[in-house]
Length: 170
Image (cartoon, rainbow, N blue to C red; front, side, top):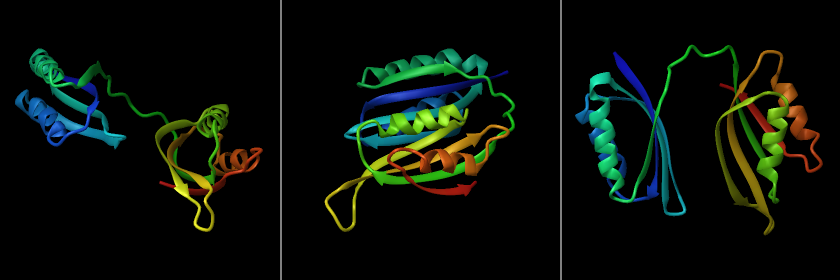
C-alpha cells in the first residue's frame, strides 16, 4: 500500500536544501509527485507531494526529522488523493495601484463567489512612467459550477479602486 504525504518545508535558503529532501525521499523508495517551492527574502518555503510504500513511512519521517537539526522546519501531513471535483480552471492576472489591504480585498471578492485559489503569486512593480508602485498578481483559480470568467472580471472591475484584469482559461 502506498502512503501519500504533503511535506511543508520552511527555513533559511541555501544550496542543496531541496537535494537533501529529495535524497531522503529517494532513500525510502518515495516518488516525488509535484511541488511548489520559492525563495523569498532569504527564506525558503516549499510544498511537495510524495508517495512511498507504507512500510517506508517511519524511516522517511526519521530522515526528515534529522534534516530539521540543520535549521529546517518540516511538517509531514498525510494526504488522501481524492477525485477532483468539477471545476473550471482559470488563470487571472491583476494589475493596479498598490495599497495596504489589496490581497484581503482580492481574496474577499473570490471567496464571495466560492472560487478556490489554487495558486497565487504577487509582487510590487514600479510603474513605467512614474514612481508609483503597482501591485501585480497571477492567480490560478478553480471556478465552481455557475461562476463564469465574466463574473470574476466583474467583481474586480467594480471594486472602489478597480484592478486591470487579464483572464485566460487554462
